[in-house]
Image 1: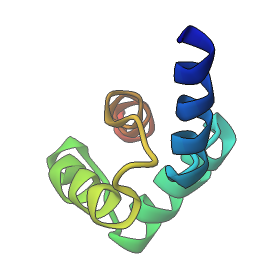
Image 2: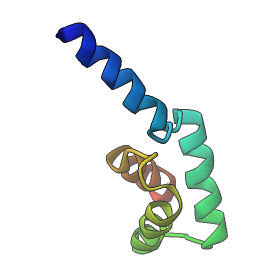
Image 3: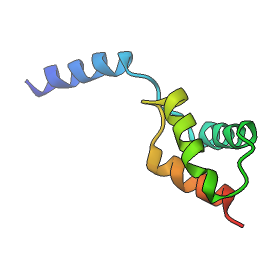
Length: 74
């Protein structure tokens, strides 16, 4: 029964969007910051909204939030 469950998980994973790597996430965050001309933490909401719109299901938003904060921090 456990083997059947593992097989089903593999089938389901084939249809799920692939998560982004750390390098891809950094590049995307930087691109969104440039596109929105974000300059401070006040712009974080706009950045996160753009990330959610374009990359829902592929990004760990906790990790994305930390990377945005790091890039916008003075």
